[in-house]
Length: 97
Image (cartoon, rainbow, N blue to C red):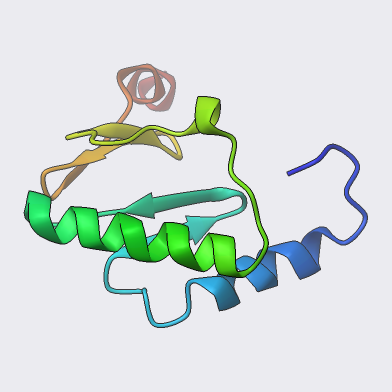
């Protein structure tokens, strides 16, 4: 999202509208979208669907900020993947202190 965007709430609600009916495989948080699947074929279809919706809404993505084909990824202070979510190691240390 551009720095200093005045209509941030509108932008976020628009992203929710763009991903409407994709809740079973895609989740958005602020300007991030996570797409998840159980197998490669489904994943390719789902990524294609989300990218098509982004294009249809005249939104753009910055390729350098995208990560594709990740088994696990860091997301909101956790490592998420393969049906498991665990806190990042550095976060655990902070919580124990």
